[in-house]
Length: 346
Image (cartoon, rainbow, N blue to C red):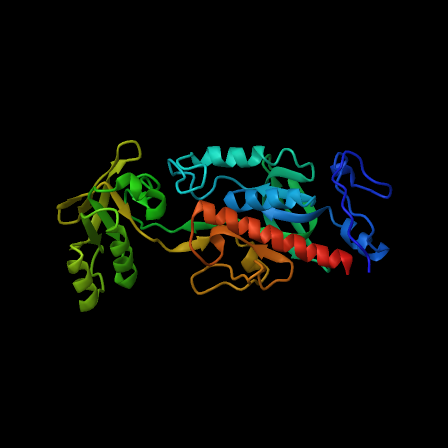
């Protein structure tokens, strides 16, 4: 059986034939059969990582440490860009989102096999042993490349209510995750927006951070008698009047919820779990399975229903948090490397 040999020392061993794009890379693919070597080197990259948030950066770092040829396509600002800080991220609690990503990019620099570029990937085409990706650079130039595997880490888009104030205050006074932001508004008046079973569960969770919590349903809340009983038992208020707008600014924060009848509910923050959409259509375009909640389905190895296409971070099922996205990206990278290694030594 052929053996995979790697050399991470200062010089490459005889037989190493790195591509020009990685002329400074000392890691190499060694004693692989001629057929396998041809399949590997026919592609410009081992892995194309699309999305440079916590999941994508974490995956690129892990793959770089595996001496993999990686292209990290940075498509723009992440989902948490409006937030003033990232919390519950081990060793980085309270860091600004942009600073966290800057540190992530900096820590890729020592790995010559990892290339990070500002790219918008618009199309993926499945090939016999990999993928072709096309799109444009940050300067608007056409771009085309190939990779043996693709990892999607493009995240999701939150669909906020079409009412004044929600989008403007998103990340400051309008919040998604109490584990990320609950501590900063603890012991203050809080609102929870939504309807049905979901808003009840979120409101009960939020009551961990404050004893002054009010559910705002913007019209009939479709709550069962049992749900109303649970809210009353926990001292959680209920306002079912139609909402006119949220009052406040990103700098001063949320002041209150204004209802159509002219009444107000003073609150420091409003929590909600809005519907989500995939930020990128690439998985759906390739025919990958999408769950009923709009997430990209993956197996235990982070692979989608399309062979060779992986996904990680907020775009897959599960809890959403920056630290969890980073862990998801690292896990996907490990699964990717092991799958590629099995292919190379077969």
